[in-house]
Image (tube, rainbow, N blue to C red; front, side, top):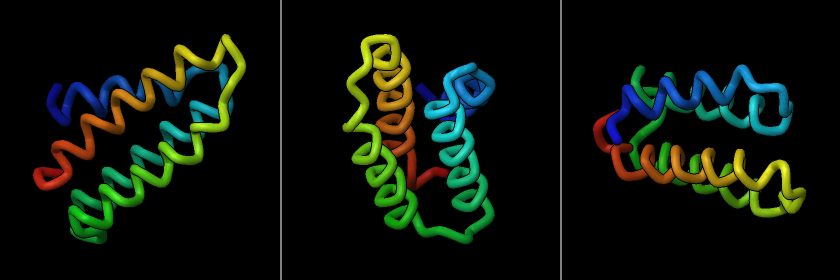
Length: 85
């Protein structure tokens, strides 16, 4: 999974009807923009993304588990490519 694919999937998630995940996806997209513009270092980017994942751990509702897994997968991909963001 490359940065372009991750960004596209985050954009789709950001337009979903679940406000928890659409908000989180929008925030992750903002983090990407800040990282790409040099406002965040790769380590700051990775730490911010990990913080978002920690906040998502409280989600328990069954209907949100699929979205939670999707967001976690995308964030993990971003952490891997954070040096290239």
